[in-house]
Length: 110
Length: 113
Image (cartoon, rainbow over all chains, first blue to last red):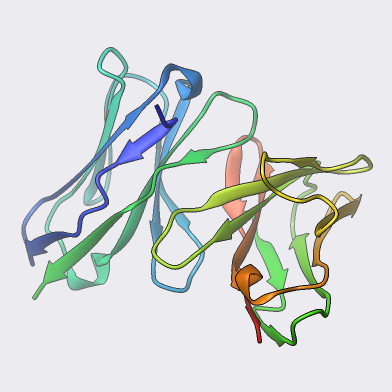
């Protein structure tokens, strides 16, 4: 099993809808979790980090972590065309390195 | 926030030549930097972990003699792609950690003709 797994998509949602991105991880990387956004040809940028079970909200973004199910998700409310990008889920066992999923490509349709 | 700078952002070279990419942490000291490679429509793949003052740790399948990494100071790590070939064409990204959060450089797109 890969350390971090994501559905590659593509995921299309209409503008204003909620986009839901999902990720599962293995026992080997179960300490900290991150969501990065990557526009085509650019480096990833950190959107959210989450370390404990439950929800964490930041503006239109909500990260959800369920350690029992080894599942982490990102919800984007009121999706905008500018949210169209590839979203990378990442997890770390705590050794200052990250394991990345393959990314989910999101398209927000105006 | 912490900033990591990479240079050059784009480089085109002939097959057989060597290319050096620099990664700098601009406002913090990074004892550890990471080098990733990303092929089109694929995720980031860790190539090596660069530690200041010591040899880099390479991931399985990455040739250490081909991808030379030097981390001579707390703010600079370099990746040299030696004897580059067209299959080395890729997007190379460095990152550095500051208090546990990972910051990425802008990336360097290498095209080998």
